[in-house]
Picture 1 (tube, rainbow, N blue to C red):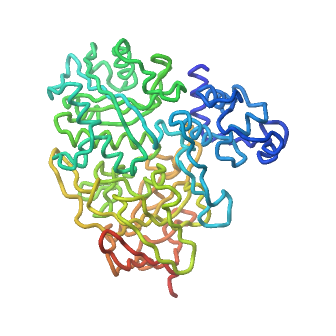
Picture 2 (picture 1 turned 135 degrees about the horizontal axis):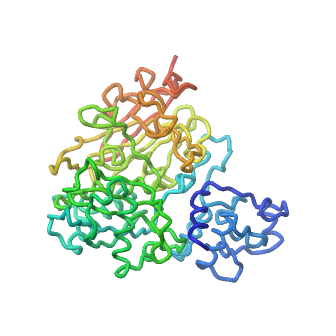
Picture 3 (picture 1 turned 45 degrees about the vertical axis):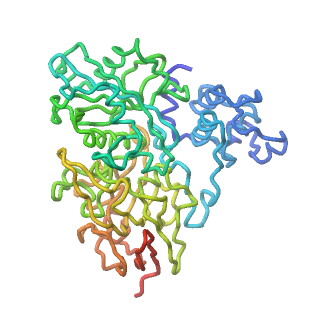
Length: 519
């Protein structure tokens, strides 16, 4: 398959095709299994083995290049046995090929169920076609570059940078919890995401000014210059012609004004060893400050997996953006602090078995620190729709692990002390834009209201009250000004009608009771 055809697959990530449609028979998956006998899940080409050839065949089907015609192929391609073949099945097939063991199909509430817990998928962000999968082992390339007119001054070798970025966890490090990109993500994901990487240094022959406002041309120059040293297929583990994101780190002297770190699409029609990055993370970063350097790329890599920034520059409070207050520290907002339970849900790091869903009436829940274990409560507003909807997330956040400290302007800082319960109001609705499927309310969507008062992907329910944590004995109810659902115009006016009480916090465990609000 050509790279162009595979790029079509990337753009068609939300494609969903029923078995009856592409088989041309109208026969359901269940009926097909009865007729054909045992199913060998993943064996799309029906040759008796599950290999990259099966993934290739499924990609060709999803892009429309070569639709599946054999009923056995269709049934085998339906990895989660839900009667639909789409990119979720392709993701499961790739995991099976890479790991050699099949992930158990998601059990629980079927899509469209009247149960308020319906629609909890394994990887909610799949319809947004992320450039890097948020689970499993992901290998990336990082290049520290220099130019004739802009030299690196940190003096670090590629091996030293490698250890700083992809080294083992070290709680005793002065850079903790940003002692390495790999360690931060492994803690954040509860071991579900393992990022490894390779580091190279390279001096670009052209001057930096040559690439002003041309980041993709710089990526092309770097990858072309290193082509003799690197087999870029190393970073395309599933062989689909798309590499994991590439990080290009510029010297400090490049300046944040012109080269502030950013994650963007690699848009050139150029391949390297038959593959190309879907996204590039590029910008100046302080290599001489290990935690500052790592936190920049931890933040940017978060975008490559499908989530946007949670801040808006026009909404500034005490030098911070977006989620303010002690409860507002979040890696995708401040580039400090752990990922919130909302982010971890969207990345698929909190499995369905660890998601507690409020079903109505009076319920008491047990929460553990989300820095130590996957644990949260979800309050849906109607159908969760695979988490691409409006809902509340309640988590117990503590000043441990990735929240133990942060770094700003090369100085260590305490983010908050102790912690407590935070209530996040989330609206993860998506829409199809000219750039593909995007969050409808992310901060640069055409639908986003610049006042920051209306819909946002994520906000604290108590932001008007300072955004603090809720402690033992405290309640969240209609007296909290922001504790409302959005109305049709985006205002927070629709009463939630619930009272959330933090019953107790002790020994790393929190109990929370949710009941209908009286009156």
